[in-house]
Length: 318
Image 1 (tube, helix red, strand yellow):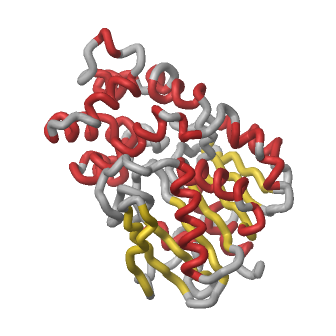
Image 2: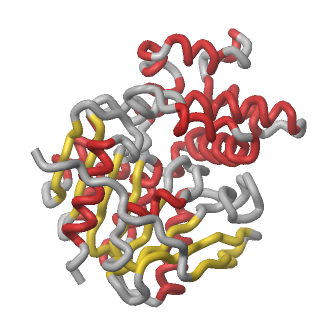
């Protein structure tokens, strides 16, 4: 068996800035790699997660010209943790604004977790702008997926962590955990917001890897990160992503001419493998890899190996 691939060298951005996208929002962006090389855009998870230097390492900096950006309200984008004018369709429009700013006709789209949801929404809206589509930890944002993670399902796998997640919510409100948390995450009282945000965020941070990874989960409990992550994620999920039920699978036929990859961990808790399998059936042109011994995180060795091999493979497609 060949040695598992890991991140390419993490290089510094050769350009960065903020793009005014209207509605009071300014999106932070950075470009890494080689100017004029194969264009790609990276879509981070959450919603509300923001970008990290490690994400640059999915791409060979000699062969790619990658744009990474913080979606509305998170990371270095402003205003921080804002829910105003912050929907899936605002983000799809932002991606097009960024593509026009970069000055390319088409680009590779790479997204994981919520980033896969956004990548699907963008690619089904603008299939003529996508050269390849790389998806990790597929999330189609159906009602069943939301209930599995925030009501009953993962609660059975992580009863100890679930007990901590529900602890801030009175018993009479636990029939709808997303609504109960929304009330607290939108409170006028900052202490109430931060306490709820940290509880919401740590539930995710501690259930995304197959085995505990404190270096991954700890950051989810930091005040500023947690506030943006929890408020924006909850906002999107309470509104079902402003998608029709089952829309992303229904419209997968629009991807029929796009080559791509679906990679998913067998033991992915937030995003059950069933939905990645359904997408694979609806989009046969994409390679499908179900990684044994892996959960949800892109840093898990088998998932990381497959993602890097895929970007290496697509690097010379122009």
